Amino acid sequence: MPAAAVASAWWRFPLGLMLLEIVVYLSQDMYLPALPRVQASFGVGQSAAQLSIAAWSLGAALVQLLTGPLSDRLGRRAVLLAGVVGFALASAGCALGTAFGVFLVARVAQGCAGVWALNAGYAAIHELFESRTAIRIQAWISGITLLAPALGPALGALLMAATRWQAMFLLLAVCGAALFAPLRKWTPESVDFAGRLPLTGRRVAADYLHLLRNLPLMCLLAVWCLVFAVTMVWTVAGPFMLRDADGGSRGFVWAQVYACGAFVVGTRLVDRMLRLYPRALLLGWALDGCLGGICLTLLAALLRAPAALVVGLFGVFMAGAGLLLSPLYRAVLERARQQMGLRVAWVSCTINLSGALACALAAALELAELRSFAAISLLALLAASALARSRRGLHAEPQPDELRGG
Image 1 (cartoon, rainbow, N blue to C red):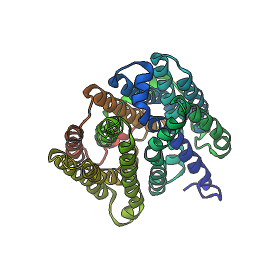
Image 2: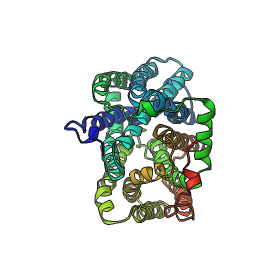
Image 3: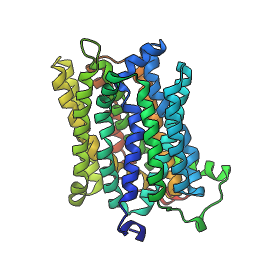
Image 4: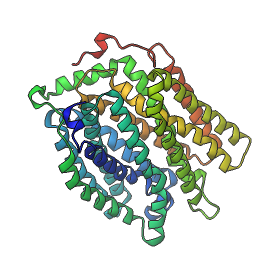
């Protein structure tokens, strides 16, 4: 671990990044209970309202391919702070837009700016800390930031009871602006400016093409995306699958609190399990837990068990995902040798694109039944399990030509 990481105040930057991530992901989760009201406010259909979730993820995916190389060239700190400012402005735009098209554009900008900042922050984390410490920090951040999807719907419901849904986005704008000063003070610069490579379109394109051809990396990244896609479909379809008799979202709010709590339990086990078992073995067990949880969820849904039991069994999947995703993220990054900003950008872009596609799928199918959700999730996890156990999967060793930078 470098000297910057062992200084007395090393924890301030991860703390600031954690707070930023909570605010950024509240922009997805806090207004989930308001989806039916957003639909009514703009006079659009259910699928169009759900596309406002996909628009955020699409914006987040598109911008990463640019911001990763920019943070390698300009530094993590400058790119992160620019993203914070952009997020605050885009959140205000979401609140002030009077047409659905304007609202969607603001949502795209919000996703772009928020994940722009987080991308630079996580690149710095993986440069400042060695592997196990970085995994532990990311698992810790992930566990705490699950407050956003766990408590975000409840907070959104409370705000809706007191005021209009637009107030949520004004609150996000204020929170984003308030984080600028502490992040400006706490964010270290992890880029070695003396060793920077020139920023040219040809070199960046060659690096991305090399990552695309890195089959061990892409195999593990596909596993990450498939597991993540299940959580995104749950998030988007949940307010409709668990809608109350009066059309409210109280059932979904409590189900989301439970599901996120199960995820946090998984993240808390990461460090202890890594001390006892090899990472590849741990990842295989965690993926088996995810698959088993979805199998039980589907069985209960097909037998028309009470919704509370179906949601309870879905928590097994969420605990497995909490144990899986942080070490798997690091494993993906370690299968390449390009500059860290570019690697994180590629991974983040692919993850957010998979999230956008998952949201679009949920919107197109208009999922409203737990058994349909569980059946689609099972297909995704069977594909993830097959990839993880393939010759390019968890136990594959990357070849030297697959690690060479462009």
